[in-house]
Image (tube, rainbow, N blue to C red):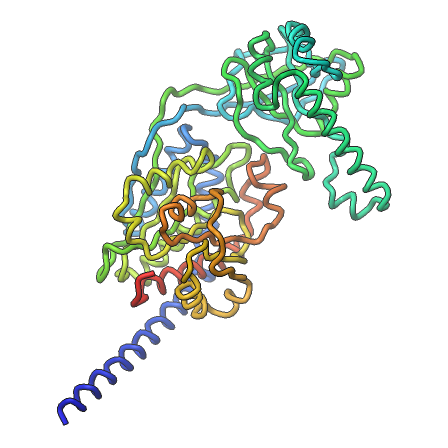
Length: 487
């Protein structure tokens, strides 16, 4: 009789516990949905980070300003946070860029210096702009030509035949005209690459050869296949300025040079070398109560290239994870497992911040319940890949089934999936067998228009999509923390 009573009590406790957890879960999800959509702080966070602070190039003073801003925000929300140094980088701050065509006519050109570009003198540099030879026979003939660059700007990019993206041609051109344009472009690109190869240099090494030969600057145009948009990366030389000019203006100068008009341009590129600067990750923690030595990590890289303000790469991921932490602290202040927010530095140069964290914290990596990483634009999460973990469906599937249908219905899953090739910070964890997952977003023309471009700015953010992601990651984090099982 006593044995039956004990079994009855245990079964009753199990069901009561399940009912109580179900009620707590429903209350939490209800609070999250109301807070995420009705009291969102995303717009304000985005304004402060992207408009006030701006881009976050590793080694720049603005990168450190952003780290300090994030720590202050977390502390204001009652979340412990600090900046943890992991290394050093070449310090450099961007100043103004001004590029003008001064002969044979006057026109201000759209462009900017590349990251880590050498500065010009205060009044700038005015010089003729020339093209590379159009018919390079071999490396010896190119070596004979090289002295002619002394005192000149050199145009090193292939001029584009059209500034219209393919979708524009496809909509308006005849099929025959569209196919002809693509064939002409392919032929031009092949010829350009073969000609450059004949010089003995590549697009990555030619700049240094021109600098050594006495060129006063490098002019490029790294078109991103969209209207008015260019990729902005780093300079490959240290002594002379490197500037990127819009497709439209680059083509103008190139055609003038090609037709023997000897165009002159004036470049003013102000920048400041800062010496060797420390690099940081911003780490915030909400300590667990029952299993404090098991971890959920909310992951986003904090740094950016600096052609725009780094809005969708990766300001969106950053403010999403910060907003998730804010709401967790408000409605789930005592999680079962410890929740860490990792805002990583220097992702753009090779996942440096997250790889250092993984290297320096093996005990954390060994006991990760899940890493949720976001790093590909402003869109709502549309796919989750199991990253090759054999049983990823068992836990990710279990958590996703409890996410509201309005959010869940947009997400495609792949189990067990394949490990990522290293494109974002979750890869640092996956490489050490920790269950880390990219919360992959809808494209929103990301790769052409905002990824590493001069147009990656606040106005490209779709905040309703981010609110969706906040709610999703919030709920997934809660369920991962409360799960009775270790992944």
